[in-house]
Image (cartoon, rainbow, N blue to C red; front, side):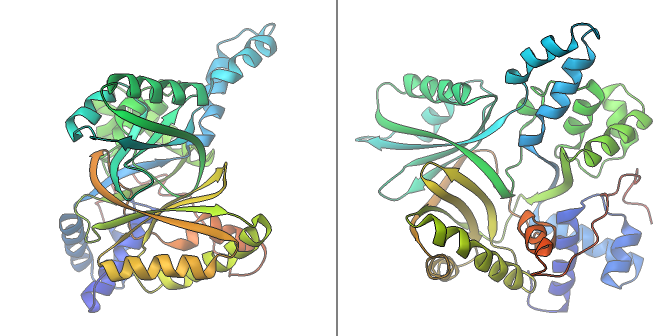
Length: 378
């Protein structure tokens, strides 16, 4: 993210922290091939300069497993099958994107935020600039019915304004939105697991002793919960988002497949292009998700200059065949944060898919710092 050798070291640190924000100072020193004091100083500089917030990256679509296990363990052996099967429909969460188009006078930012009420569902909301939509809301809810109920309640609270609301199920395939504590508190998982996630949220480099103390539990319980959540894939990693990003021009692309076969065949080439580009430059893509109706994708990306955004949009249109691409510029952020980070693409779902087909070299993935209690120690 810089133009000199210091910038290269920043890039290395940011990419390391993107995949394991609990990396120890000793490992960071080895990775950057610099003295321990120099690595620690650069780490602190990067944290301050970009306003890094260390948070858990949680697999929303995987949460049902631990919710189901908790419900099943509370049943007797005799009734476990019937009672646990009844519990399946109310376990887990899904991702949804709510897009709103206002007709006539649009509500103010304060009115929109007030219309969200006390719901845990909205994790991110921002104005959109363009003709097709005026507002985007990334929603996490237990079911499509719950997501629609949230959207309906939002519309009723703004009944003095005319609007069209579109609520669609999405499946995140790359990147993340930082989740708020209100949502994490809704997870119906064992207390030690929930307390760990809450403790890591915004303070992902805290010691397990400190997290446990705040939750009234011991460090061994926190370490065990961390290890279990990592191994089961619910906790993907401790990562970060930039609270003071250098990239302030944000866009959302709606990609609609008008030739599904050509679209599916072209995605690999596009992902390969991004992987190669981001190996030597800052990562522009923030979030990607699949959309079933219409078949396609939503892509959110962040840039330093308008020319970079224009180049990115042109590249998507020229690389992906059989698609229509609509651009929406993201304006004022009303709720939450974008997950802006300089991510190491080798740890992406897309890279793993390409590696299985031997299109890129395999890498040895490690469990992320499962035994590191105090990452700031050498």
